[in-house]
Length: 105
Image (tube, rainbow, N blue to C red; front, side):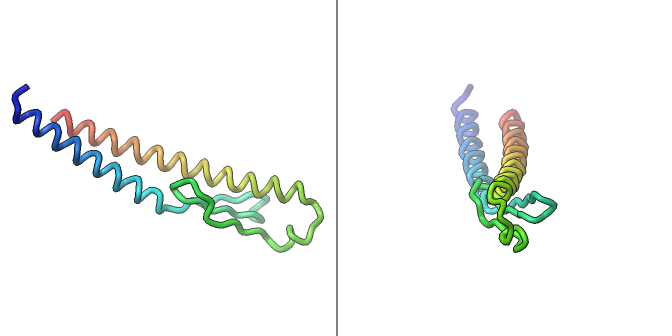
């Protein structure tokens, strides 16, 4: 491999790393929502896998079944986290694939 090819490959690698960093920031800013209990509990998480908000219907708060409420909150949060993980994973895989294809050119 001649020095010009090596420099071009290094340049492309740096560009890929920059694009991946930008993509991770963009994905972290996205929101993912899920609900449980027929929509009585809603959870929103970020692409950085952080809980952003939890909404609980007042009717559930008036009830005395603490265990059910805890289960519904956990289910909604876990479902939202799963959506976020799947979406982020798919997007990063797509970007990586396109970048690797660019290195082969």
